[in-house]
Length: 407
Image (cartoon, rainbow, N blue to C red; front, top):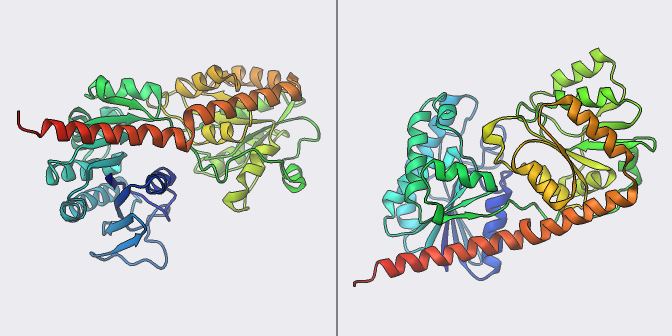
C-alpha cells in the first residue's frame, strides 16, 4: 500500500508512536509518506542544526518525510494556537501534492494536529482516513484555550466523518463515540513502547546502588512529575509506612521543586529523588532494579481513558506495577494480574498498597512481572498494534475503492 502519515511531531522529536509505526510499515513492504513539521519539541524552539524552509524532504527506502514550516513556539496557549494554525495551512498546501495518490491516510491525532487533519481532508477528498486518537479532551477543557471551542467542534466532525477511528484505551472508545464517532468504525489499538529499550534485563550493581533500599521494598516512579500525576499523594503514602518501603522518584517535571520541599518540610526519610542522567537505552536497568513501578494519575474523567507510557514500559520489562489510577490503567493491571491497584489521589489507600507490596515475596513478584510481560506481548506490542492498524488501513482503502465504483 501507499500510506500517508500526518503527525505534528516526528523523530528526532520524542514522538515514538508515529516514528516506530512508519518504520514498521516500511519493514512490511509499504510505501510511507510522512507529512510533519520541523522538530521543535520539547523546548518550543527549532532543534539545533535545523532551519525551516518550504521544500524539505528526506528519502530512504520506501519512506519519504516532508517537513513544512510552522510557528514553533509553544510557550503560551496563544503561541500553541499559532503553531496549529500555521501547521494546518502549510500541511494542506503541501499535502495536496505530496499525499496525492496514497491509498489511505493515517492521522496521529492530538489537539495540535486536529486543524491540519481537517484541512487535509478537504484537500484530499478521495483519500480514506484512519484517525488514530491520542487525546479526546472534553469540549469544556478545550474551550478554556484560545480557539479551543472551534478545535473541539472540528474534532467532533473528524470523529464523525473518519473512515475509521483507532483509540488507545478501552474507555477512550466511549469518549470517542460520545464525541460523534460511529461505534462500528472504532478500533482499539493499545499503545506500545520502545521494545529496543524496555525489555527484561538484570539490573547493574550501579543502578541497584542508585535506587538503594537496603533490602527493603523499592517502588520507583520513572516518568513525569507534574500536575497529571499529583505525586504528593505518593509522598504522603510513603511517609505513612516509613519502615516498610522506599519510594524513588526518577524523573522531572513542573511539580518536582514543590515535592522536594514537601519531603524536606515533613522530614520524610524513605522518599528519594534520583536524577537519571544515563542514556535512554539504559532505562530498562532502572525498571529492573525496582520491585514495583508506580503508575499514578489524577482522578480526572479524561485521564481514565489514558494509558500512560510507564505502563506498557513496565509490562514489557516484566516489572510489577502499583497503579494509583482510575479507569483503564488500573483495569489493565488487575486483568493481567500484574500488580496492585488503588483509587487515585487517596494517600491512605496507596499507603495500604505500599504496605501490602512489601509483604509479597520475590517469587510472587516475579510471577506478576511475567504475567504483565505476557499481556504486553499479546495485546500491546509493536507487532500487535501495527497488525491492527495495517488491517484497518486495508479495510478503509478497500471500502473507499468499493464505494467509488459505479453501480
